[in-house]
Image 1: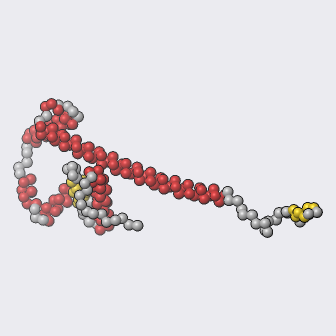
Image 2: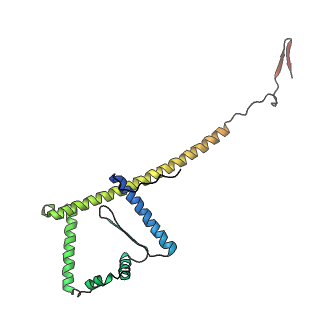
Image 3: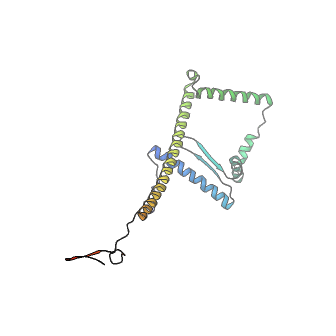
Length: 201
């Protein structure tokens, strides 16, 4: 019996929506890899989840290389190349930029582990809250996937045990079956009782 047709619309239950997203995302990426191997095609997929998490697949090379190739083919690469062709930073400016990025990252790590929350701005707190929500959803989706895998493994184990139990039950019934008695074919002597006495056949 086949599955019924799935109605394509937004899933209201957040947990079911996340589970469906994980399953279908994995299926989509698997199909893309198979298509790439079978047809020697270059495939790039970008997926943004509801919570802003990025999933990407580049079957050959990198995603950046595929995007650049796409931009060249669609003639949209000229403005981007013009923007990147600006004069490069000298060593001192580049060092300053890198130091500033390191400080920002260190502050972010401190905030993530609860340090310096009193000195955070409202925007930083909202960003931290959004990141925490994203991580919670991500952890829940991973947990749900693991639980579904464990449930499937237990179902498989149950099926194996049921089959083994049935096999053993059949073997037991075969070994304990009592042969049916047929008095006409049995080679056993029975006494014949007559009024005057007992005669052995």
